[in-house]
Length: 426
Ligand SMILES: [Zn+2]
Image 1 (cartoon, helix red, strand yellow):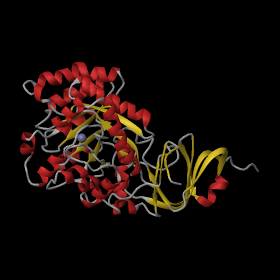
Image 2 (cartoon, protein in one colour):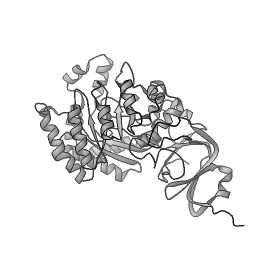
Image 3 (cartoon, rainbow, N blue to C red):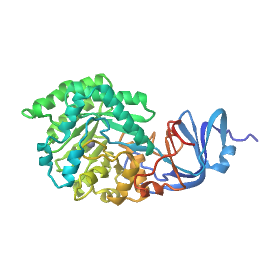
Image 4 (spheres, rainbow, N blue to C red):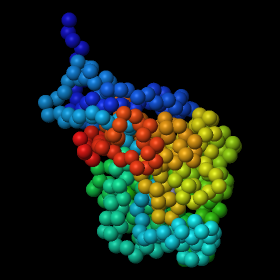
């Protein structure tokens, strides 16, 4: 009898205390089959050319896996492996400091007071326009390195503080350089429609027109973005303006994302469903009707508990209702200089539990697999199973339940991105 051929592997993490798998993964259609996690104890993970080929009990590795001659073999003793976190909504590239606004808000000053004191998005725009590209890059790279320590292997980063073509391209070039420099998987999003700059307020339609006729074609031609995002709010862009901007993006190969229902329910969710947006984000004010519309739409509802906490909102996005409705809820950090300085995945895991009342399993699935779907990579990353990229965050201890519990202080022992060791304390 011929023995069955073994699976070949060139990278092994062996003898892990625990490996977290998702037995009922959302596959990008319909409702979520389940929110369970399973912890495989004393397990190993094998990959080949950056793709997971085997997950199973450590004791069965030698009989089921052929370890290639030059394979890298890591000892996972005392560690828990979770899928690398996916931070699907950030404004990580910026300049300047808005700590005074933070303090004003804590003291009860209104948004209008803060604006009158020169605060808000447009202050960051001024800082971005004044800081040399190299310095913007260096500051963002430092932040990225901190983010990696929290187990993030894939991160989306938006432009949107330049607000003129020259400075939007400057931000996108910085994001592009980060892609070259960092071992993380970085997903660039164009967000020229983040705010209306002061000198364009007199004629917002002309500003929208310029974004559609000039900026989007140029961003697409230079291949500097995968997604096109818009801030649909009464103080930013109307539904009609947002539709035009997102449709223009689609014509140029940029998939749609949308900031919707953060302050007012204007119809951003309807627009996301109509245009097949990859995600609708914030959703603080989304009600039963919006949840019903999202059902089965394929649009990933992405909630940002760091922002609602940072802004001291009286309530948070209706995450539990979304889960009960079977929606593939995702969570992300929304790291930015004004409304959320929480950085990385672990604090967001904690806030998802504390503020949104998610279980540890729900928070983990929302911050990995569903966030991967929010970037269109739901079949490639976000879970530990054969066929997906070897993206692992390895935390000390024998359970992933420590990650949220430790409320942001937990740090990885090792981080693996596509089979490459990015952080190594083995
Ligand atoms: Zn945002």
